[in-house]
Image (cartoon, rainbow, N blue to C red; front, side):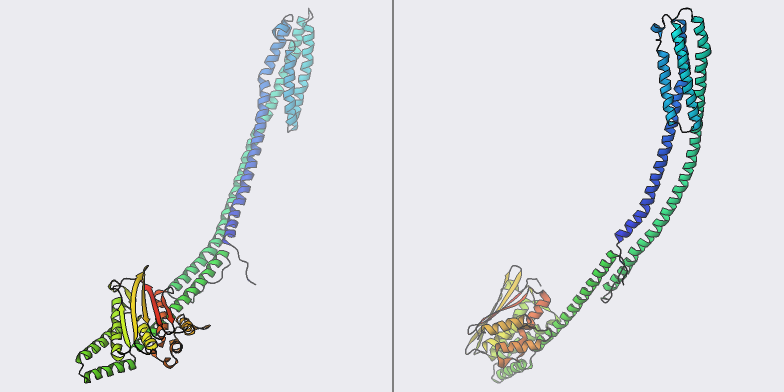
Length: 504
């Protein structure tokens, strides 16, 4: 059972998760801690601020107002208002009741409760003084009450407020020490978390990097071997999805390249075999013997000029056939080649052969694959003109169209019926019926083409001319170039050659 594959994306996400989650938790912890410190600090400072406001002003303000009421009882309402002391006490009571509600210790609650009780007592004493202040003859008594009751109570309240403020200040110091302790703990926690994050990130990142770099290094090695020509090399399976895709694609690519290289090698071998057979066909002993017999016959007849022409044509013919081993020659050289061939053959078949070559001079500078037109001319002679009763004509002409060179070899021989024409076209395409002819089996094409033309001439070497020319053209120029055949029985045949227009 194969191991479960994972993607690089998932591994990187895992690495990100290892880093982000602890960091997020640490940040949240620090924010909560900071918020707690801030809230506690703000509460203590607010409590101290509220209490300190009454610590400074409450005693002085209340004592002053009560003195005005006692000393100026008749004008008290006009000067300060007899209700002012009660308003001040109510305001103070409201503040300290709020502080009592949020007090977080027994000491603070007891201190605030004592302050509130003193405020209640102070309110009663103030009410007594205010009520007696309006009665004449109570000045001395009210002044005594002011000294012995009100001022003593406000002094007591101030002392209790100071004790409460001292307690809250002590809490503030304790809070500072707690904050220092918590900060130290937070620093230790953050340090541990950071170490764990770094260690986890390093561990996971090394594994992720190894899962990426090692397969890539292996793939690079495989690529180097493939570049050196080893197309048998294959990348191994990998647990990473992305690398598995790369390895599979690489394996398919190398396999296809290997197949292409092998196909090119086979095509080159077939091309060389085809060229060899064409050269062998051109050096056909029968053709050479017949030509030499004709030269001997002309010499015995005293036709010295004809002998010179024949030898010259034969020399030109074989010079172009060999072409110093070149695969490509100029159109002009190919024209001279077929002209030499037709001149030689006209000596032998002067009673049945006439020819015409019309290739514009402006095409002579273009390149053409050697032995392209000559096999077609030979095919027209042996399978067209010779089967006709009477004089026959072979016409070779060419033109340039849309970046292509088109050459036609036309004869007015016997031609072919539709069945034979279809068979020839199948042979040119490399097929006979549903059976494809392998490029190297030219002999079969030779026999088949010979039967398409003439059963008696199926063994003639030129029988595979069309097939071999087509194969060579496609191997050298591509599948879009090659031969096309048109024929009408009793009227003749025309073979067209299409090649790219390339300057030599």
